[in-house]
Image 1 (cartoon, rainbow over the protein chains, first blue to last red):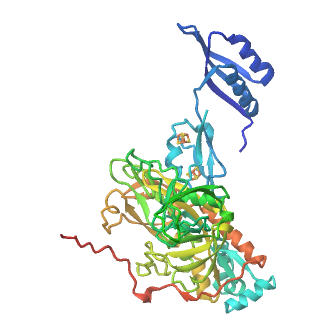
Image 2: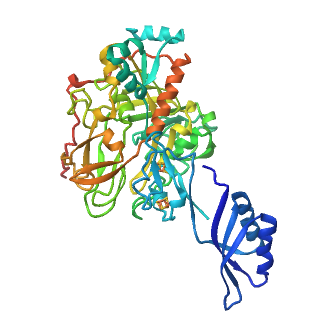
Length: 139
Length: 402
Ligand code: SF4
Ligand code: SF4
């Protein structure tokens, strides 16, 4: 399963020298990302803080995040992302009874384990319980 | 039906052999019956892919200039301690070995992210591995310190040699206690929260040859993606356990010691593995061909998951305390349905060994045989069977008094 579109919530911390609007509009123009400002404020030391939902293609998203990082914006992930390294997953099934949201499901025909990442709450329980360590945490 | 392995090999050479996996055979026997199936089928292939702790590899690294004698000193591979009780440059790395500074279970449950199994995986993947050794120095081996990268390609020998693999049947692990436990059978949730098993069941090599009539010392096998051989019975080989009417052991029974050229193997089939709170190990892929020399042998290979039972064992009490009691028996068909009943409670099941990858191994082995590049071998000697009287002995502890 290759994901093309992503939608992620991130927290941006802008140092006071940066103009927030200009940066966010560049994300739209140059990286084809849609955004939704969930929260915006200025802290006492005048650092800008913005909670943003970004939607777009994974490749554009990755480039956009790189651009933000290069401008000096500090980025925090709100919804940490748990993915499966398909090279390492052996489809054993040890994760199935570990996950509290039933994000793993055994296909009774192929005996392979499907990972439904839309059910994942990023509790991280599977990360260390997976014997070949195929589950990975990303930002 | 070919009667001897030699005749089967002739058919393989002529491209006429009929080879099926142990899973495919079940349906063939259902459709055609034992007699007809035994006439048609020449070889049944089996497979298993699971964590197998008693595994390791020995390496001969070549002589340095000036020479060093690693034997009796200390040698590390990527910070993991290797065994050096041999001659100058032979070392052994066990799958469970850990770096000295790994916190183990001091931070409970320990993560065990990197150990001997991972070193073996990286060697097999062709990655450079850091060797750091200290030695005491002799007149003929003066060097006392060696720090170098090594790569599997440059080693004289790199051999996988596993002392106990491919268990014939295994426990189903549960935890009736009131706290989560971390075991070699995975994370076991409290109050019978889950049940973990670890066998390919109907595809598993020794469950298809319950009395070791064809699988023996010298049998050529699929090992870690390359070709290996059965070297001996595995440690703890225990043919004398309770068996079902079909001959299949109802407890962990026979085991295999296997050997093969690590240079031929692939990381897809030899995977460094971490058991939370327990330690490091390696997941090993093994496939064994079974020649159909008689109707009896074919009947054994036709065994299906509903005809194989495994014991449910309490890993919070009975297992650690070496108590023999079990909480019941379940079949692999039940285990693979996703739920079993233990003490009247519905318990979700999970597997530590990968059935889909076991199917893949049995299928690869089948293709190797069909293409003529893999011929069967006659075992040099059979594994000890029921008649050997061998049983599994506990340690006879005798306190040492000063
Ligand atoms: S436990 Fe790990 S290797 Fe096994 S199926 Fe789950 S993600 Fe894959
Ligand atoms: S992180 Fe938690 S919720 Fe997400 S898949 Fe792993 S166990 Fe399930």
